[in-house]
Image 1: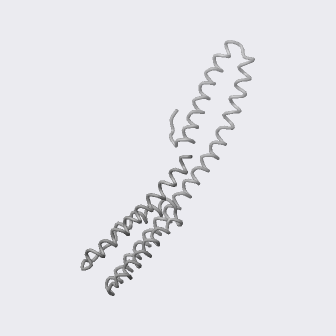
Image 2 (image 1 turned 45 degrees about the horizontal axis):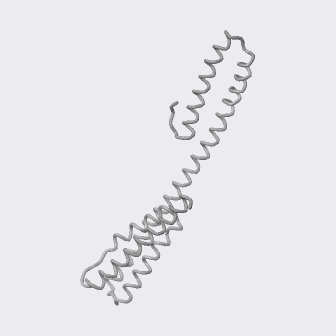
Image 3 (image 1 turned 180 degrees about the vertical axis):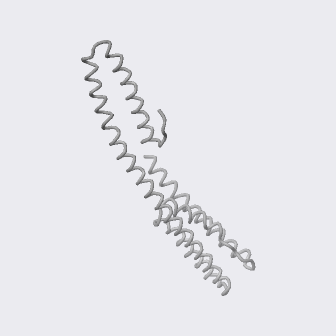
Length: 176
């Protein structure tokens, strides 16, 4: 199995576990301590993770948790205050999840734009370098020994430039 598939499966299982755990804790709390107000702050972890990893598709997680929360509260016959609190908490959870999803998608677009820029930049730099290397190689085949020394120095300089361009394109670092 490829690493990306394994990573995707692990993410899905982790979010499913966190949702299940969050809803389980909320339902246990509702049954065991009905006189206390229960805040669902730990719902944010699976909601934010899923929105970060999958963008808008990840908004399924907070909707599942909100639906289950309403279901749990409806079976308990919660009062108006508890129902209003649930609506407010659910609204905040959705707002945070939506913001994270849109920021995640914006980050992905920016990374794609950077990748495209690097590919175009690499093309414009590596083509002239390859042409220079080709002409240099031809000149070295026909050069006299005294000129060969100068051509070797040029070859070293071209290789250094090539390494710098390669590091800029691949790693974003200006170094040899």
